Length: 597
Image (tube, rainbow, N blue to C red; front, side, top):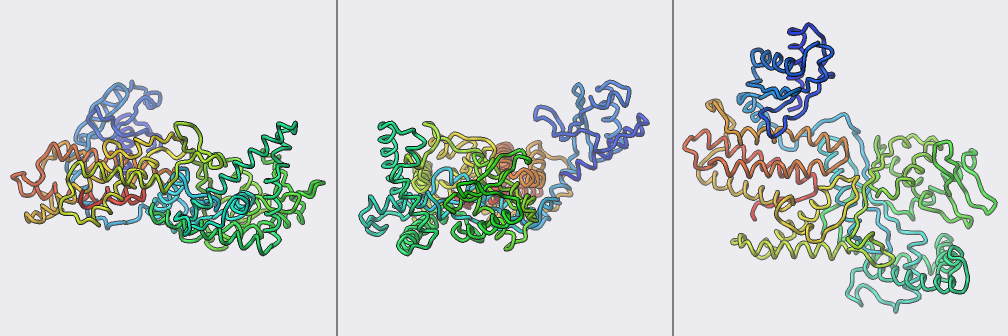
């Protein structure tokens, strides 16, 4: 499709030279897809040519349209609407385009000029709580971006940096010590990440009570937050951890082990995976070495209290702490170490961090600090900043327990898919195991599509009812379209209808057939755009448009019952290619499409 567009631009450039004696390069020509209400495929905007050609926009459009119909065989007609020349592509060209599509090997890479060796870091959970709705958007986004970049032929490594140490982890550990009764996931029949998360919330509850008490006694709020007994104990525990205190480290390992088991079960349920895990406990020491390197080179400085800082004022940022006065590290410390480890492991030319937009400043500081240290991978950092997910009641807050639990949400969408599918009564012939698998595929498809169809940069409001819908602009609508095509192909095979690619006897296409080919031909350009913008939403919209176009085609023509044998075979082939393209598109979103529904 892009090649056809370039060819039409070249023909327009030649027409301008011949008709008007002027030179206009293809780069200067503004071409866009023709709006649905007008006949045509490509539209040339002629307003910008009036000054150089000395004619009115409609006059220019008329002259160019007549020349193309006479001299460019792929252009079958045109119409001029004010300053817009709409060009219609002939059926022979559409049939040729379709033949090219069906002859393409499946999963052929969509080559781009983008990075070739990419690391995508996503998920990055804390080991003090289970995954929640916000994590789901992060996981689905990271996984999908990785698959999209793979589709361009890039080597992509998916990594997960687990935040397994720090003051927030000590809070859940201290909460378990102070308020627990030696519970285990087995004794309470609860997932380990949920058990640990319970004690993080309990810590925060009692900590807030202590702060409130101190404020009531006349202590300033900031001082109260710093001097509350629980917070002081948590800081003491962090220092003990960094010093290797045997009792603290033993508890840390036990509780983290519970969380890893719980997180891995969630990852398996939602269908995401990783090529490598990094742990903050294994990267922060390397980060400390980089901080010392910066001190030795005079790039960083120490304050009187012993804390270490970097001054990024010249970079348009601010001063940023790298080590606390007690020598313990901060997030930025371990990020310096992790960036180096990732580069040593993968030698990437692009390192994508899938992190919410509330960390925009942090990511700017990380990159600027690495640039100050003159690290060769500093410029390869790309922050895929995405909008947070809000609830109708406001922002989610783990410490207050106001989150949408990922495991519970997955169970709910699967149950909703089960209820809706059973109401339709179209699962006869499926075993109980096959039905269970189908409900999971549909429920997860609904949830993933709901979270991915929104542009990553946009903050989104989570609507529980919309997230489980199976009709309309939803994942299951697209999944159903694929199942319908799979059913049609099985019937065609039983009827002996081949998916032929010889369409030489077809003279004229139906409007819906032409629209189907045109939509299929867009796939390559869509993948390139999604890869360029790191936006699965581009793929999601395309998959929906493709399914919608196919359903219109299905309603308007006879596929298996047309009296013309070649036409039947062509329509089956057109359906088969649509099914393959839907499957490929949904795969890029991490969504499975069923063969039966």
